[in-house]
Length: 143
Image (cartoon, rainbow, N blue to C red; front, side, top):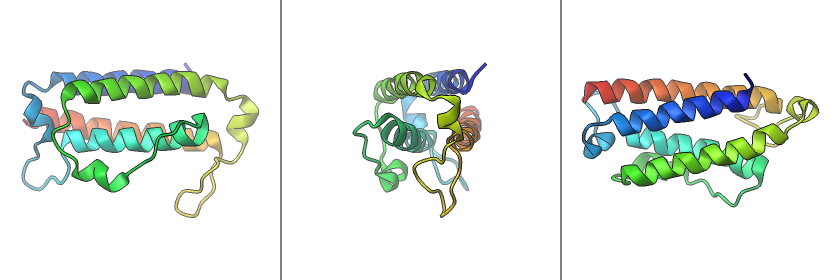
């Protein structure tokens, strides 16, 4: 299994989680002591992956608005799922095009003033996706 397959698998799990919310409005709710709703975590993942994989590697025209990822509310489930499928397609088209040599090169952007290989950055992005996927699963079960 390659990294593209892991992203596909985990984005499919994220889509499943969003579709498992019984009430669409619960996607945007939190419980006491929890700052971000499942919806905002998904918006954050969409922004993050569309920026680092889409804009940076695939050269899409996506422009990230990070602050809005945590403040926007009540995006319809259908739109969220559609955006996740679109992101999945971007990843499926982009990552297989990277050669082993490309993966060893420095990622085009620094993260917190650090330089990582493209391969390490993709691993970090996958871990980040899974961290928030677990949070979203927990939030859904709490609702």
